Length: 362
Image (cartoon, rainbow, N blue to C red; front, side, top):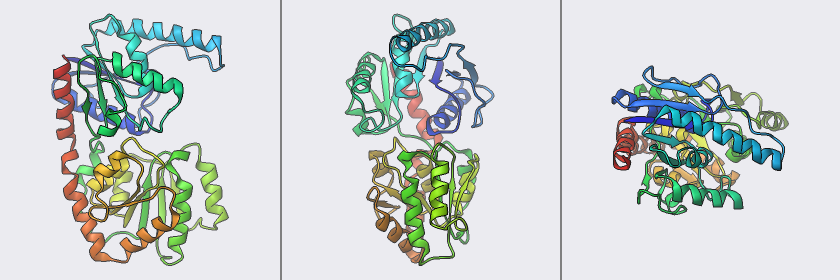
């Protein structure tokens, strides 16, 4: 079997991490595996030596709106189709809704099976009239489709093969598998992810600032970078909180710092399936998350293996932080249950689900 994953690039991000990890798992199981990128950049995540990485050499799409952009997109699509057809894959997976759109065209009337994936929540991400139409078309004309949650699956029509699949994220971070329970947790609250409006770090910062007024020996560490960094730093400065709220450049082994923290905090407005939340639960860290996705509700049973709070509720987040750090028995219960509940998300278990679905498609 000759399998490829197509993605925009291999920078830092959830879909990018999933692509590198799943491709590596397939390659280790004697499947000829390639990652095809639309734009070339230095990979942020480690890539298995058995996995080929190919960058399509296509012109960028015209940034203007109108007829120039339409023809630019069309020419790029034809160029991508030619290159992909010549590679002769049995299966190619589009690792975003945009990649799925392209692959419908690139694989039409070829022997290559096209599988789309929805890596975010279609009810929120790119939920515009044009993208709703394109998602329906991608779902209908793909040979298969993979979703992170059943609720996402119900948004799409049945693909050509007659069945789609729900395959959740795995714990892709290799460091997470070797982490041991800390004897004593650091007095830190941690967060990981791109600094984007949808992650609502402004809410997190305000909630932590309120929590800190009663618990002034704790600090907040946010591992991330992105377009909201300057705004968030300005907010931290306005609160005079530079000493206890830190934005730290992301590193692949940040999970080691997270694993020793008292709480992992996620305040997103919506998620596909949060890799950082899953990794933190897997490492037995007490977690607080907003009620941002069906996948979050799959991962967390409220007050059993984590806490789910309302989106944007600063008081609820601050109170939940206070409850965990000041109740050792409750914190330990969350930690133990988080560990037990996430063993099923190992890369071995999830990787087998991908291979089983590929075999059904072929």
